[in-house]
Image (cartoon, rainbow, N blue to C red; front, side, top):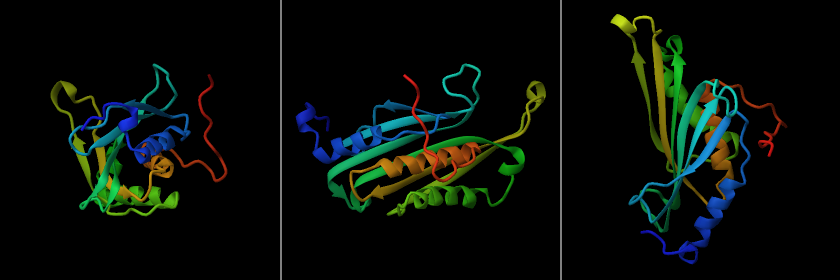
Length: 194
């Protein structure tokens, strides 16, 4: 369902979008609004992210990337156990030694749970997968080092339309997967200069 205009959009969904726009992220994280998926829920929105070594620099290296999707059904959905469902994807390239660790999937899922707990949220009705792909090159590509690509997919239900802490938790998950140290207590990321 596509709303005909702003008056047709439920107030809770508008409040959710405004709460996301109020979040200031670390300077290494670049966010972009993109269209949400169609046909999964009556209302949706999405944000993509890149975690880079330097903000908006051509020479910057991408450390991780991902997508944060907000699904909203005013009637709720039984499988969600609520009206707001958040769906995330995080991708990062890890060192081969880290990728070979047999506990990597469990550790990565703990990153997700810890990120939510770190902002005081519960992983309500949470589910997800952790996938790792080990790549080894041969022949003309033999000069490339072995690498592991990690992908964390997770979804959970938000209790109310204030999604700020959910986005902050996702940012923490992205930065953890990228290998960035957490910000010290009391340090707040500053927005870009305009």
